[in-house]
Amino acid sequence: MITSPSSLRRSERSRRATLDAALALCTEKGYGRVTIEAIAARAGVSKKTIYRWWPSKSAVLLEAFTEALVDATPFVDTGDIAADIRTHVTGAVRLLSTPPFGPAYAGILSELHHDDELAETVRTQLIEPRFAAAVGRLRRAQEQGQIPPGADLPLAVEMLYGPVYYRHVLRKPGQDEATVAALVTHVLRALGAPEP
Image 1 (cartoon, rainbow, N blue to C red):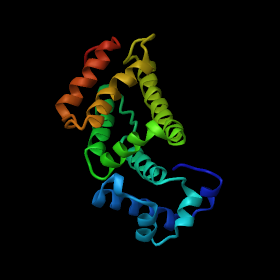
Image 2 (cartoon, rainbow, N blue to C red):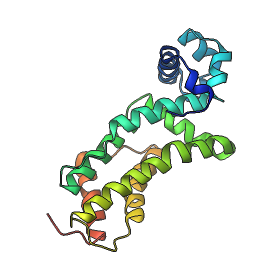
Image 3 (cartoon, rainbow, N blue to C red):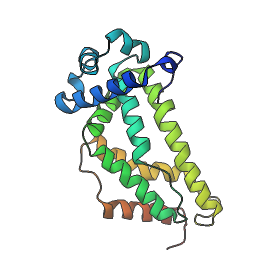
Image 4 (tube, rainbow, N blue to C red):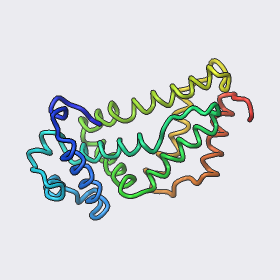
């Protein structure tokens, strides 16, 4: 959740209604046609309430997307780094392929180019924490001997996420499970990880 001093005083019922309304409208109308007015009307809250908690519709949809992404892409540790990364990346691909999440995130990404505040929020509230968690999962695998010492873990995360973003931004079909498996195998091989 994107937190600020005012967000700490939010009613959870109103917050959830606002996020759900924004996602529903994104599905029905498309990202570009969603307005704060429509979100407020659907959620049964005032525009003033929404603007007190979020600066824009992008911020509302970013919070909804971030919650869904965190739920869909856990960093599990079963002791098998290849299987765990496949699970993680497959969760991201599925979420990005599912309306309203994929279209909402594409809309948010398109706004980054002319909204510096949104770009900073995306970076600090979504990208950096997820990136750090991914590096942390790879580091645990390194400590378990599944990835060699000295492997460039931040680069590995970029290699894993890059193809997912590439396909999403260009509106290409998402990877299937075989393609995700091949991607994970390739990245682990590039790190020098032993073959399973």
